[in-house]
Image 1: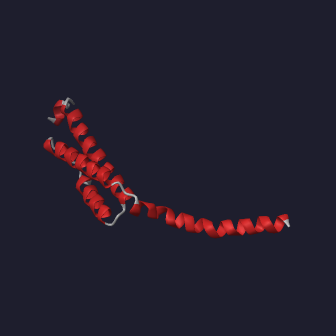
Image 2: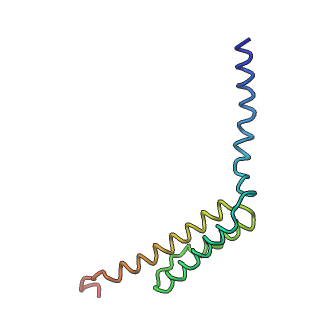
Image 3: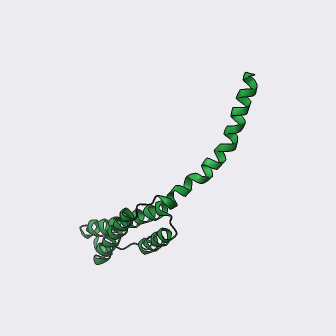
Length: 111
């Protein structure tokens, strides 16, 4: 009796697990915080402009922002947020890179 109960529970668990795993990613479509995403995109855009002002805008910042906006339109808020944060990080890193290299003294043969 116990063996039959355990095997039934195990079989039921095997049937439910794939359904839960497949639908876990769908939460993103229904529970996105639009305000937080707009703020993240605005911060990334401001950081991009700051980096560009000193010549430190990295190549993919604009691509990440564009993809973030596209993902948001499709309702993929987690992906959009991740891309916006990545764009902001790259913009801040590009700005820091330029500022750090301003103080570097080059050897005379490179001047």
